[in-house]
Figure 1 (cartoon, helix red, strand yellow):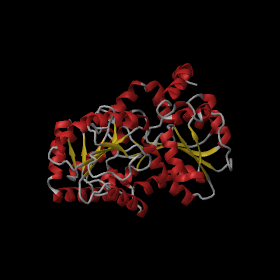
Figure 2 (tube, rainbow, N blue to C red):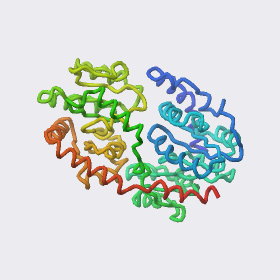
Figure 3 (cartoon, rainbow, N blue to C red):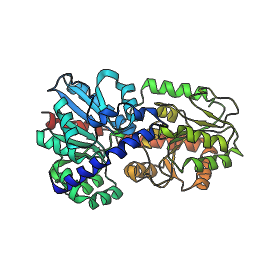
Figure 4 (cartoon, rainbow, N blue to C red):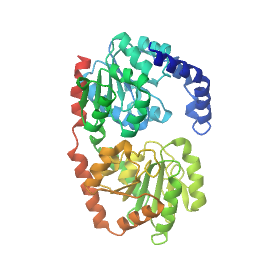
Amino acid sequence: MTFMRLVYTLILLLSLPFLMLRLYWRGRLLPTYRQRWLERLALGLPKACDADRVIWIHAVSVGEVVVASKLIQCLQRDYPDHVLLVTTTTPTGSERLLQTWGDQVLHCYLPWDLPWAMSQVFKRFNPRAVFLIETEIWPNLVAQANSTGVPIALLNARLSARSARGYGRLGALLTPTLQSLDLIVAQTKADARRFIALGVEPSRLAISGNIKFDQHLTPELRGQAGVIRDQWGSSTREVWVAASTHEGEEQQLLRAYEALAKQRPKLLLCIVPRHPDRFERVFQMALAANPKTIRRSSHPTIEADTQVVVADTMGELVPMLGAADIVFMGGSLVPTGGHNMLEAAQWGVPVVSGPHTFNFAYASRLLIKAQAMLIAKDAEELALVVSGLLANETNRRVMGSRGQTAVEGERGALERLVQAIKPLLA
């Protein structure tokens, strides 16, 4: 063990009581954080069905689970005799995974990155390969894969300039970890260049594009979107969905809505908080700002005078985007880095974003270049931009069509990724 990894491990070990207290604290608002906590210590893990044919995929939360699901489909197609183990970090990621795949995959939480915990996981499942989704780089997990001779790869990898600077400051720890990965399949050439700058050999890099472009709207999703539109009475009113919002954004959205509602009182605003443990807080905030606010879970079908809906249900975001006339993509009015605006663009819906989109820089540039997304830096600009879109239905349709075309033109990343990882499973 290198000196820096030893220091990292000691810090993590000393942090265990605080990590467990954090789970308990977060469980106040989301009780599932207090469940299955032994898995975080590599205890109570499920039993492997076939110990020599396990492929391990780690997807931290909901967004990564969406990506992992596409990979799971391909692995089930190409390696039907293998068992797929999927680990997540958050309860919301776990819930989304189980909703989608049920008992078709093995599942548990990823243990904290301690050597003995990772050793236990590798002994239990004896994986044939390990695939980490997007930005999950855990030094002891990678080291354990190397010591047991298990190929390990980072897939659909993205590395913003901001993250690269942060990784650079931890070079003594992260550079050896990155160099120990057998393969990094980056989303873009810019991501690949940043990994190379951090010491990754070009021979261990491939570029696939972003798997999130390879999204296909199933008849089931289209049907769900139609049901939501009917429930919201969207034949007689416009619907503005604010997706994956964070602390500091809902206040600005509500201010923008207040200005818009003076001219368009029938406009419906649906706020979808990114984190379930904020559902109640956001509802109370919205209710204080607008008494015509309801919860989605309590009122699937809204009244004619409802103005604001707080979406406090799970698994409905994608069809809600399809039920919208305009989508604001959250995490962008505050410096979180944005969220996946492609999910809205694929529906042919015009997208509005804040200025902070560094986690989805390529997708953001693509939609802006295609004139399918507009930027607003604060509540006042947001009201002006949305007002302009509401006033011109033809323009909305043209923007939406451009977004769909842009997304379709970028598809193919999934198959490129699958081809890149085949040597690791040979």
